[in-house]
Amino acid sequence: MYMIESKGGAITCMLLALLFLGTWPAIMTLTERRGRLPQHTYLDYTLTNLLAAVIIALTLGQMGPSRPNFSTQLSQDNWQSVMFAVAGGIVLSLGNLATQYAWAFVGLSVTEVITASITVVIGTTLNYFLDDRINRAEVLFPGVACFLIAVCLGSAVHKSNAADNKSKLQDFESLETTSSFQKETDLENNGLAKGKAKEGTAAFLIELEKQRAIKVFGKSTVIGLAITFFAGICFSLFSPAFNLATNDQWHTLKHGVPKLNVYTAFFYFSISAFVVALILNIRFLYWPILGLPKSSFKAYLNDWNGRGWSFLAGFLCGFGNGLQFMGGQAAGYAAADAVQALPLVSTFWGILLFGEYRRSSRRTYTLLISMLFMFIVAVTVLMASSGHRK
Image 1 (cartoon, rainbow, N blue to C red):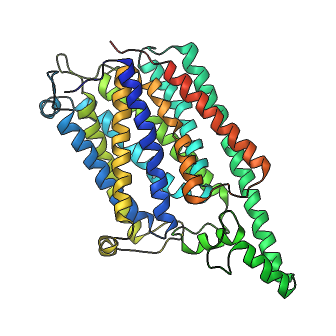
Image 2 (image 1 turned 180 degrees about the horizontal axis):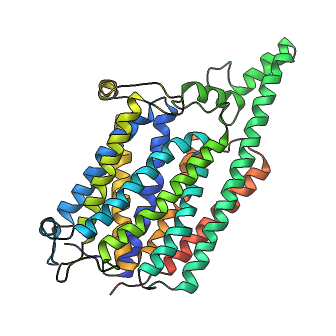
């Protein structure tokens, strides 16, 4: 099997993982905003997410002289470590499923900020002690503090942006009381008369609400924040569980049984994530949540609108997780949590693809820039804390 042995190789894996893990949520959000049911999208996503793990296991897990390789470990008596990998896959799947609904309520950028920050604050601390402190604490924990500050700023960004949108909608409704000429002029300025509303306007928000799958107008943002925090707790546990699966810190394996390599653990991890996602999303087809319309397995199979994007999202997430674990096994899983700076990437896509924060207030822009700055500092500091597993 192929092993990452240098700090430079580990950091390269982390940077690639950061790009992939920051991009796939934007793709999933894109399909929801175009009206595709999240149940359909997630079923497609989970298929290619598992396929990515299989590809990694059958290639990197088999090549090279290092032993035991992936296929050898499938028949070994290592079920104790397998259970940790399975547990990690379950909580990751629950977290990913929750974020799919949270994106609709609080936006792509804020969801990623809050979940990533919770993951780092809890997960990185756990990984630091599980890895026998191979990462430099005097560098690592200031990076964790930056993430903690970022989550506070993220909440402030959401609150400020929500107030901006509310103000836009109230101004739009007030057009009903204006003169006919003034009303027509304002509608043209908002873009309705031309058939396509300008990003950031009240008309744009109304058009988006009409075409998206998850309706959010009139619903409390507390629901979205509650879902987001639940997802963050789930995300904070999957990496420590994977760490235990590959390094057996609690000495659960029998004497002489090799530890799971990262590829075998990732395979079991992805299978459990796939099974949980399959069961829950098939249930949500027939008994949907959050006011979504009912669907069926037949309707899902016939829904090809956005299927290619959903498949791409699954591949990106699968390869991103695999790269994160490869880097973590080499340089410490605490340092690998630097990939949780994925809001840097997600915010870029949110602004570019979805017009998030267009025509927002100066206060919102100031908070947004401050939040992104804290993530840049955090990812730099966490990667600088990288150690070397002996």
